[in-house]
Structure formats: C-alpha cells, structure tokens
Amino acid sequence: MTDGILLLNKPAGLTSFDSLNAVKKALGTRKVGHTGTLDKFASGLLVVLAGWALKLSPWFDRCDKQYEGVIRFGVETDTLDPEGVPVGEGEVPSRERLEQALTMFQGDIMQAPPAYSAIHIEGKRAYQMARSGAEVKMEERPVTIHALELRSYKPPLANVYVHCSKGTYIRSLARDIALAAGSRAHLACLERTRVAGFDLADAVPMDSPNLAAALGPISPETFDALGLPWITVDEAVAKSMRQGKPLDRMIGDVPIPESLGVFCDDGFVAVIVKKQGNRSWSYGYVHAGA
Image 1 (cartoon, one colour):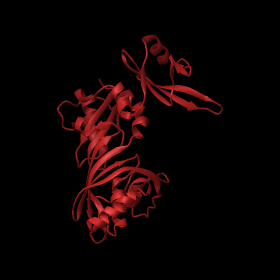
Image 2 (cartoon, rainbow, N blue to C red):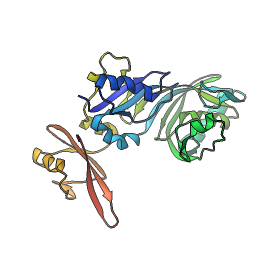
Image 3 (tube, helix red, strand yellow):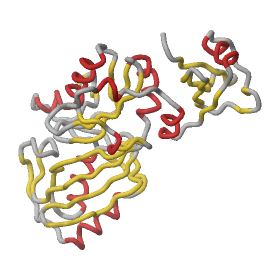
Image 4 (cartoon, rainbow, N blue to C red):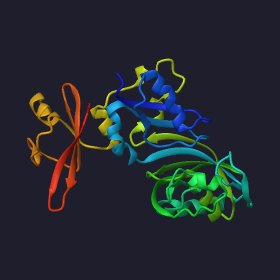
C-alpha cells in the first residue's frame, strides 16, 4: 500500500523535508508530503500523507496543534531557537512576572512570524532574505492560543504547554512572552504532541524497521480525528460518485455540509465539497485514486 496516512515521530536534528526521505524509500514512492512543518531543532508528531491521500492536505493543514516546549530566558537569538546567534539579552523574570505575561497571550492574538521562517515575501522565503543580511519585516497576523500553561519554572528555563491554531509560531510566542515579562528569550526545545485528534503516542519512530506497515488507510476514524462529518453509502451511490455524477443537496436524508467524507464497504470514496459560485452553491468531489 502506498496511499494513506502515517503518524511519524520526527527526531530533533532533521528537517521535516529530510524526515520524509525514509518514508519515500520505505513506500517506494515520491508522492509523500507532511501536513505541517516542524523546525529542525524540534521533535514530535509529523502527520504524513502518501499517494492520493495528498489530495486531502487542505483538511489537515487547517488543524490546531499542541506542543510541549522549553523557553530559555535571558538571551534572544536571531532565529529564536538554540541554533541562532544571540541578538539581545534581558533580565530573567520572576515567576510572578512570567505568569502575568502568560495571561496576555491567550485567546485571539496578533503575532509576527520569525524572520527565519519559510513565509514568502515578494517571491522569496523570509529565511533566505534574513540569511543574506537583508532587513526582513514580518507582518503580524491573527492566531488563536486555545491554552497556554506554565508546567514548571526553574529560571532561566520555563516548561510550557501550548494548544494553538494553525499558523502559530511557538518561537515567536516565546519571544513575545519574554518581551512582555521585561526579558528576552528563545525557544530551547520543542515537541509537538498532538495535531487535531492525532496523538504523538500513536506515531512511529523514523528509524522503524517497517515504516510501510505503519501506513494506514483514510478511514472514518481519520475524519473523526479531523473533526469532520462522514457517512457511509451503498455501492451504487459510491459508483455514481466515482463517476463524477452531479449531486443533489441531500444524500438520502442527510444534508450536505461544507465538507463531508464518504465511505462504502470498500473504504474511502471521496470528500464532498460545497462550493460557492457566482449565484448559487454547487458540490464537487475530492476522490480517492487517480
């Protein structure tokens, strides 16, 4: 099987892109991609899609994520991680001051991504511009911090738990928390523990002797983990969908939401997608297979 989903435990020291090489080799295909970058210094859950399952990337990309991290106060680096060059120093905050700062970064906030990131600016990656010595201005954008907890604090190290929306940079969060506490800081280490309903405890290590066996099919449980609705249909309806025939607004007595997973006895059939045209709504498919 070369189509499906794999939960990979990425080790620190490898880029997300390089971590996929072992998966490509194990599956014998280059049609492999991850659904959310982990920085080189970070470890943890990397959700990997292979084969036709890559078509489902948009639903995975929008997922919220959970992390365990360690913020080192006193020194900020240009990359906001332990691999960077120090660019600023500050007094290590007291626990009281740190806890006060943490309350400012919960809920909907505005955040400026790190200059050393893969965001495009005028056709170039931000990190490429930063490495060339160019001044990089990162525009703030809205993100949501669902939960932010101080698990322990042994100055200058603070262990924190973060549950956040897509697009959140934990390196930026560490920087901003430090500034709010009258200090400077960088993210010393980071582990992603959860993506939507997918858990690190279910991931396989990259050096597993049989990564191919860990590749699972897109299933109703996959949609449950994504928080998306799904239904099962009989073979006749599944055949009609696979042939791309037009949909009514109902499948039997089930109204079609904006996204709906469809399964039959043979497995995954398609995602039905609600699309808004100039004058009305229409429905399309994201199919399994070719």
